[in-house]
Image (cartoon, rainbow, N blue to C red; front, top):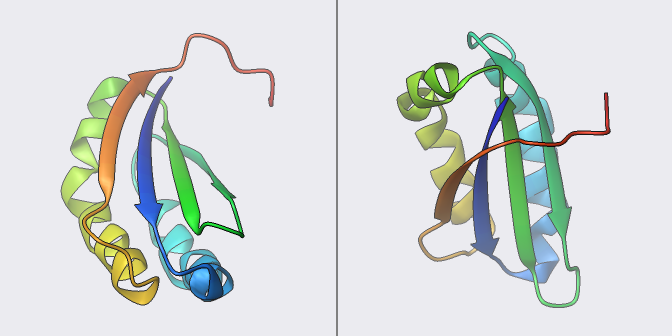
Length: 98
């Protein structure tokens, strides 16, 4: 399994709006993508630092989804008043949330 980690420094007052947008508009589209396994979003409500982690069946699936998720990432940044999102990619070597 692989994970794409996106870090946003957003306005703390916008965290709920961004989360709602992701849940209602973007996640249903992610679920249509080959190899999508799920998403976790964590935040510090005081600072607005928010980390979104999407999980993918394989590195190929993660790489193949790059263009499809780019718009959602930018919408989250725009809605949250964030600057350019920071994106990193990892191999998941341990997962206990199954």
